[in-house]
Each structure stands twice: as structure tokens, then as C-alpha cells.
Figure 1 (cartoon, rainbow, N blue to C red):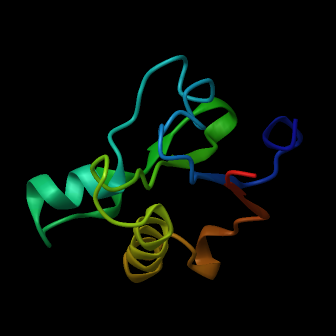
Figure 2: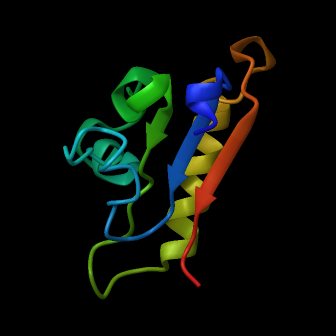
Length: 104
């Protein structure tokens, strides 16, 4: 509804299942930030980890560690730090809202 009102919105799906943005992306799964980092190393651009969905909503899915390895919270922190480094939160983007879909 916010995007339909002309607001600039970003959704960061912090669920390890990486399905928070699926409906915004027309039912398509999105490659996670952590999977992209594992596959491509440090050569990641913002376009590699952020997609544009319904109503021009920016969508990103941090993902989680491989099952049985590591802490999901650490993956979320890594992803948010990377988004910040790549300029996902720049004032010039004019984001009105950023939503973090977290467990609990």
C-alpha cells in the first residue's frame, strides 16, 4: 500500500528461508546476499543483491548460514553492512521506509 501511495520502500527479508520478498517479486525466489558472497566473493554490486519488485519496492534477502553452521544473526549483520557499503541506504535514493522482516 505504501508503494502504491508513491512512497519509496525497501524490504530486507531477514528470515533464513529467504522468502520474505517472494510475493513482491511476483512469486520468484531471490538469490540471497550470503549465497552471492559465497559464489562471487568480494566482487558484488548492489544490483547483484537487490531486486525491484511490485510498486518499485527494493527487495533483498540476506539469507543465512549453511544448516548447522554459524549464526543467522551474524549473516544478517554481514548483509546489512554490505548493503550500507554499496549505498543501498543513501539519502539520494529517497527511501521513505525500510522494513526488516525478522523472526519472532
